[in-house]
Length: 156
Image 1: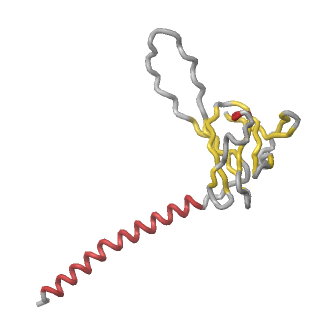
Image 2 (image 1 turned 135 degrees about the vertical axis):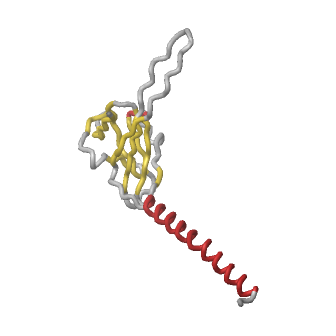
Image 3 (image 1 turned 180 degrees about the horizontal axis):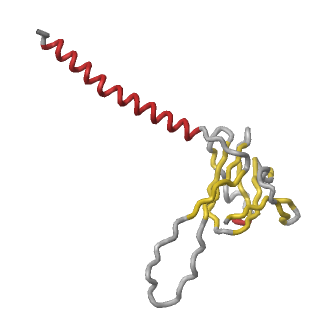
């Protein structure tokens, strides 16, 4: 018959295996997920996907002056991939051409992103990379704004 000490050692080893194997599997799954999220490749200065904000629930309005209906917003994601950029911003008619109003967030080694809620319409914009204005190279729609060429985005 097996001694009590040896039996306890076997039970401890079995418990260790039962606990460590699932934790290693979960750890590997978490690493794979975060590696996937961290390595998305994005295009250069490109407004990508727009999304709808779900309509708000209608609540009965008490008697009195009614507020005008609010426009539905779309979330437009601007993405810029520029090697060696230290600061990237978006300036457009949606932020009164203020170059400091919409700084982009560094999303990767050379990627920058900004998410802007906009109602449907046409918008003129430029990208400012380290203080220099740049047109969107992937957006062929351009227009003149105060004597300079700018990109045009149509939000549907």
